[in-house]
Image (cartoon, rainbow, N blue to C red):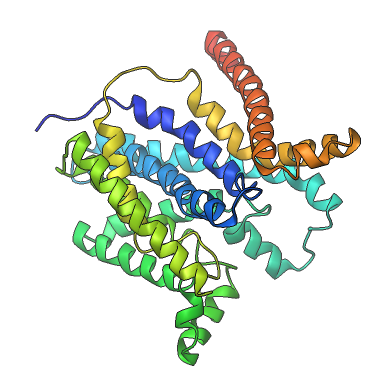
Amino acid sequence: MKQRKNYAAIDNFRLVAALLIVAIHTGPLESFHSTADFLVTYCVGRIAVPFFLMVTGFFVLAPYQKSMGRSSYQAEKAAGKLWKFLKKTALLYGAAILLYLPVMIYAKQWNNSPGEWLKELFFDGTFYHLWYLPAVLTGCILLAGLLSVCNPPVISLTVLVLYIIGTGGDSYYGLLSQALPVKIFYEGIFTVSSYTRNGIFFAPMFLWMGVIIANGKIRMSGQTALTGFLISMAGMMGEGLLSFSLEWQKHNSMYLLLPVVMFFLFELLLSAEGTFTIPMVRDVSMCVYIIHPICIILVRGLAGVLKLTDIFVEQSLIHYLTVCALSLVLSVGIALGMQAFRNRADAAPGYFR
């Protein structure tokens, strides 16, 4: 069967996903209609983080799985790629912690309890949006371990069970916690991680889906993928509204239909034709994710100084668009600097690299 090699749509969607993450933290439609904002922000917007996890599974973990049982050279190359990704992500997380440290101190969000600090470092993230980085690190390490001792069907069952448990502590917590043993079980989890949206219960499912799509033989047309995506997205929006209206949600990152939505979305992107890729989209999308909370603070602060809070903060759509614009401008500047640094490093003599 012909392998798919055109990943332009996957790359370009990185920027869409990054802007959806900004929407989650700004509520762009809140000024117009709270239900519409919920559907856009906490249903449609919830595809963003799983997308990034699936990209990691597709491009990093899939070669690692495929190399197992092959030549030592191929295995070492794939393991080296995985290790490089883990090291790069850990360094990025460390840099992000340092970047937001002044903000945390100013906002008096710094936790002096060693136990709580470790909880934030390994599960919750040291700032509210940084939880993704320890989640992807933990999820990759967990899956790499499972790949060394389990076959694919067992891994599939394991990540599915973990995800269902996680969903029970997320969108369905209010329902399931009415049973005392279940409540005690989840309270035990919440002493270690504030949410089940983490590298144990959340990330492995989507990382593994990326692996399965990359190494499996499932192929579908763009029309089929689009139809499946629209139907499953409509179902997930209904699921989100139901669990929200019945006050079941402890959080709203995990829905039962989310993996189905993500499967069809990823297949849709893989089926897209065209080779145009937005310049520097990988670096720009990563920078938007990292710096957008700082941009939220800057927009709020500048709007207060200029006495334009009613326009640039209280008007939610303008607030969202302004934060996006500032995030993109700063991210493009940072990405250009990163590219220039790489070019200089590549051009330097070997002993300077």
